[in-house]
Length: 195
Ligand SMILES: [Zn+2]
Image 1: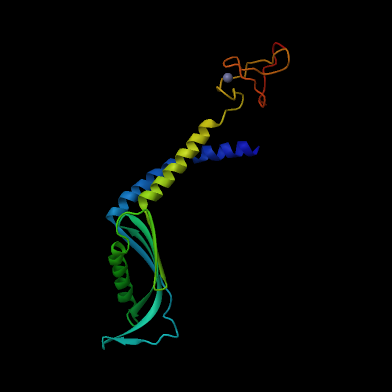
Image 2: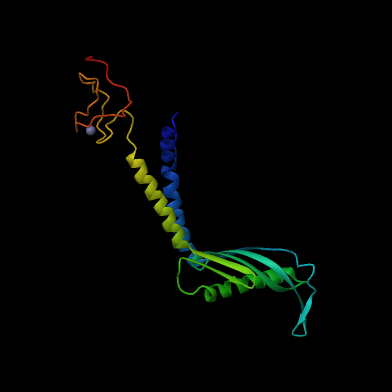
């Protein structure tokens, strides 16, 4: 199979995958307005940091957290150092999630498509879901346009007229009977009758 054939096959395979991805992307765009979902991973407290007493009450310890968040119209990635209550990990996790969502809107006002901030050694990266949806839609449109340009084997390179029953002229050339284009690079099979 030629590379071109393989590429055409790839495009045919993408015929349903890409439209499905487009629909999914726009569904997620809508969904991201309605739900707040986050996955958090935290490194163990830094060994060199001693628990500190804040407000004279609760011992706290610093640790790094990474949040992947979906909601409020976007996808957010947060990496930050937080002071957490060292002996109650469950409550600390819930608190830091709440804190992360609470600060997203204040960190990223407006609706800029891509935003990032470096704060206190942490990084927050935000991309709006509608941006991803438009990117996926553009990829689908480009693939569909490209697929539409592929001429099926045995057809005119210009007007796609079916040349299966066309014969070579007296000089051995293949001319499209429909539009007259010389099929310089045409390599399909020709009808042998009439020669
Ligand atoms: Zn033609």
